[in-house]
Image (cartoon, rainbow, N blue to C red; front, top):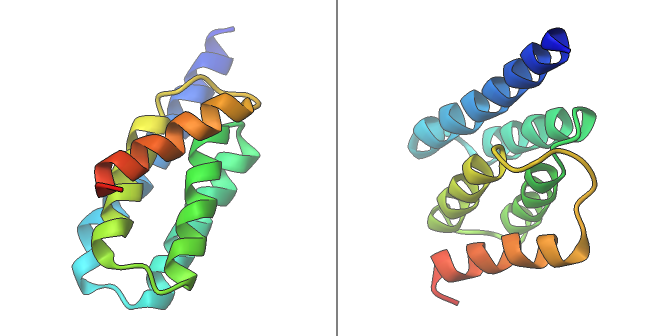
Length: 109
């Protein structure tokens, strides 16, 4: 059991680190680098059961593809940092709506 907990913590730390690194690099990143960074986070989250992070990263990819502004990107990254602490596993529709509502509130929508 300790091995599973250690692995979970390692992946959680890795996802959080990637989110933080992307947020720090954002002012100096080309759009393609942002998209690649978000995709890397999304795939890591998907492969390890971090459904809330995966869903937010997917939405962020859509926002960036639609010409999302950097302020919106930072907002999504902040929400993803919070979501990495959420319980792993399938994400009920109500939980998806709650995470997306938190992003909307942060954006002032």
